[in-house]
Image (cartoon, rainbow, N blue to C red; front, top):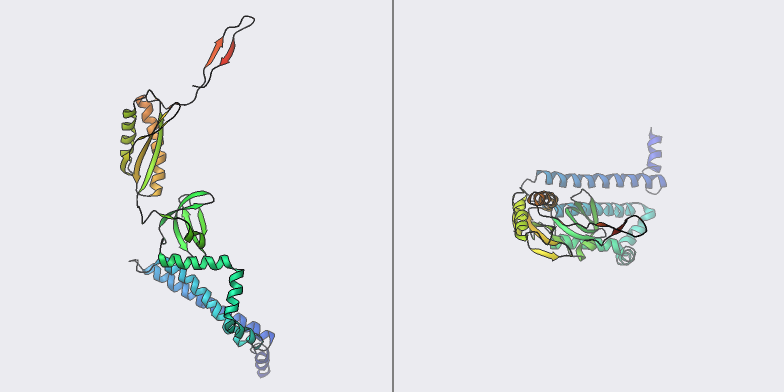
Length: 294
């Protein structure tokens, strides 16, 4: 038994041997992982018990991830100082911090840029977790709810349950419309075209009354004439809604209901159609000659 203990002490508990270095590596990684999980659990438990919103969700999420990085870095430095073969490396990590920072900065400009931009988002607070924002993405204008602000990315959840991941550097440098803070209401705009012979005032009254009857419409703003086309007069109904989700629901519902009300009132919504006129010929049967679109 003593020989077995001596064997383990000389090989597995000795940082000078390869076996010992691997054992201590596993030990340091396990401790770092355990501490990181404890920190995350503490923050998560605090957020669950915070019924009065005393803890900032945005800052908590950011600092949980930052603390995990710090824990692993500290574990790495301590490990390199414990292993004699890596002692020189550990000293170099501390004494050559400025040189390392330059090299790492040149190699990971985008990553560090996202990290610094995340700190600026946390400092200046243009948005918080739970805010509804509008941003410009490669897919066009996106509206979503901020779900988290991490060390490198801001994650939005759109109304159709898509996750839009935006680098913090882009989030900090572009124009972002915060629908929660700036204007809690959203305007739904519903354009409808009527014929030139239709009664504009009657059509406007139908559109506004239809909007006023919808339960999700907070206020009907106006219904001006916004365009005079070749065959249509366009009226644009403008109504205030509480949220972007309500706006989409109201817009789709008003299109359908206004169309039905126009049909009942005899108001035509013009559409292109073609008249075919049969012209007599001298040498054969009548042939169909199309007219221009009207």
